Image (cartoon, rainbow, N blue to C red):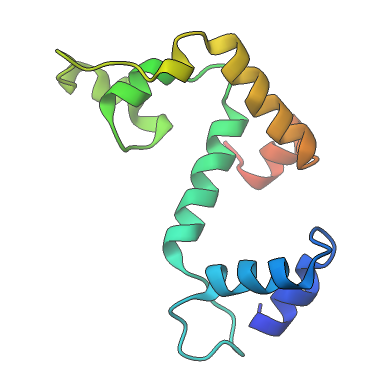
Length: 124
């Protein structure tokens, strides 16, 4: 979408015009012509990542994912044999995964995302 279309579309989700403006700027930063569709690719990568995490939050090995560092949750099993995990620590919020997974489910509920919608957004 163009910047203008994006800000208008965000009105469905964000009431505050200043916040919509900031979100639009963040989404399209770096574009030379914001009247044309486009986005900042890092934002798209992070969005794809969180959708993947939400979609698979019940089966992801979060401690191992955290120990492996930056990477995609879909590669954890392939990276497992290559990870150097000596002297690495799991973040405190992942010591007990039940509350962490509950937070992810809260994020899903807040954003009106259920398993079917996540499957539509990120097909297998």
